[in-house]
Length: 195
Image 1: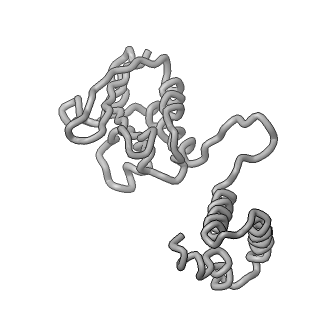
Image 2 (image 1 turned 90 degrees about the horizontal axis):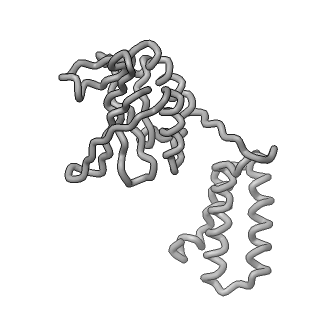
Image 3 (image 1 turned 60 degrees about the vertical axis):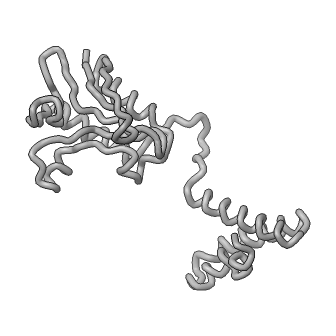
């Protein structure tokens, strides 16, 4: 059984200390990742694990708090201490008079958590891949085209023709000049309409 001492922090005036119990480090890991409701794979502000390699990189004398922010702009949860039946297995020094400590097992677990953060794996039901960031960018361009068309009073058929032309242009962009690609995605009339 692990006892975890954590803090929920919104700002200087709203902080709350809590204690939670978990059966194992893997249960704690799943609880941390299940809280997340934002993209944490590229955003170290959303989730941070103190690994031995990163501690060496910054010449730290031990670990710092495990931090994650489940929803952007809301409370940040910081894990300051983890205790097992044998004693303290992780401490950032906040509750131990500045003495930082982590066992070899916790160091390996934190390295595993950092790898999971960087390359998240999910069990999707079908063999299809989920929508990628590139596709979302394409959808954003399509929405801008629709908004620009709406501002000019165009029909739905004309809007769909523009979207088909944009998709064809995306295929040709692989070999195109970057200046031309910029003109395709951000035509001058977008700036005149304020979009």
